[in-house]
Image (cartoon, rainbow, N blue to C red):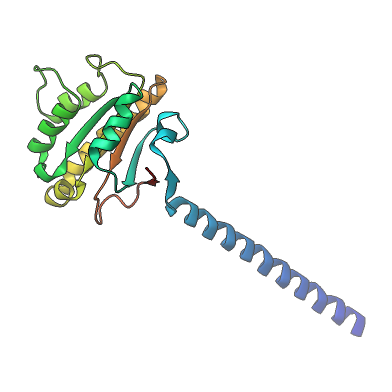
Length: 190
């Protein structure tokens, strides 16, 4: 009887120990994964230009002046577009700014459908890749969050579509404040 009780207690203790170890491993892996997803990636702009990072939309942490970033992109043969968010406060000013940054043709309709069509075409500026740098995103995002989400969705979809064609398209967002925290972060070193 004592032997049966010891075996039962030992079995329960082993099961409890095994369960605790398993849950600890799961928590450790989940914590590591969460940390990895939110940890900034330190890179150089050259890493983006050589395809080391999947094309898409990123929050960019960089003290470099826009001109330095755009110059490096252009020297690689890519198209470098810039949106100065200090002048973008709503849908209308965003659509005008992105039209200028990506040199949209004069027939561009300045509405969401036309914007989506243009950003998925870009045949008037053929390039091996595209980087659109957008500073001071928070102004548009704070003034018209729904319109900003629409713009972000269209640009993210365009990046995916361009990637399917083998042409990288990056949208790099700086000065986000509290906006866009769900996006991966890149930290550049110049």
